[in-house]
Image (cartoon, rainbow, N blue to C red; front, side):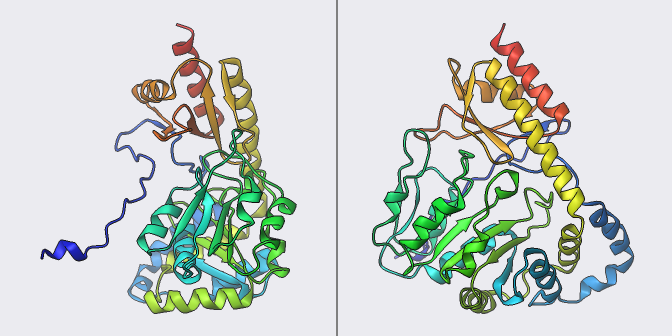
Length: 353
């Protein structure tokens, strides 16, 4: 018998392409086009003079960042869990809470890492089909299950549901953990964070990667009842105590302290999103009502893959999913005004030739 017979085999998550070429417009991985808060940049410059600190382990309990997060979100410190990006928070939550023989439920068109984690941890799961308008049918989540994961606003569709709508699913599922992944909530969604005070089985997950321009640092936050967070920390500390490095802890805290800059960047992205939607509509595109920092767009006559390949030749990278039901759509990250003007110009030139 080969040793390979004992290997855990999964189909890995495939992230957006990270081109190794210069002078491109990168609109394929939903990164923020603006730099992090000025205080973060200044702290990075200061840290080069304190590099000797890197010989020391970071705090395993990341207490300073937890304190700052608790103050920012108006929660107790016992309601905060910090991970290496929201992916780490979500993966730990899958490992911690989804141990039933009943299937975990999530949409068929959503963040594709959910299926990977379920396979990796041998978690039974069922994907519930979005309707013809790419919306979640909440009734699909009223049956027996081992847990539920809802991305709100959803990705890659960009569609957001209200807190009241999500609460209907939570009310019907108080015997299993409900995860609400709010990676894009700052761009127009309604957070479900108040619901963690009403229900002890709800985990709301945020990230610093999108609206806070810190994708390169990897910081994610899970928020829930004290009981829920304790279980998460018990699993975390059984795997790896030192998960967040020292500079990241400092920079993440600083990004929370400049609310004006944060709101300014979010507002700019939302304004650029509105302009881009209007311009793409003129070119024959239809789009969902995005409440994220990206658009989910389909052209009336030209295949998405053709447009995807054409844009690459022009140095503009967007995301194309060669998957059932969404293979005629492009996911287009909102960049700066100048970047989106180039995108529109290249599409216009191609479509009107």
